[in-house]
Length: 133
Image (cartoon, rainbow, N blue to C red):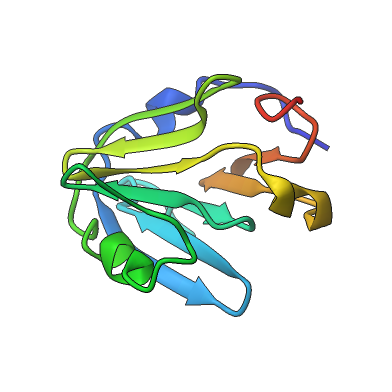
């Protein structure tokens, strides 16, 4: 169940992406924590793998250069994070973009992505905003 809505865009803007974790079947992007917060750092998990745009080149998860493009974003600062039917999920950093739009892989997914900022989280599922077909 989705927790109460909040302004997702403010949660990540200005934070630095400091790690990309490749887990068995998903990825986790970790961001600098607030200095006055305890616990796990903010993270954005993609259970359906996103596209990476870096230096005007787009890398799909099936591209052999995709993982390298994703890790090249480490050290970048978040400029914007938005969700909309047009954009899907879009994380814009000062050196590139990570984005996810509805695709056939959603049919097998229970959850598409999850954002956790100090225990306050948002989860996106197939067929829900912003992925309604």
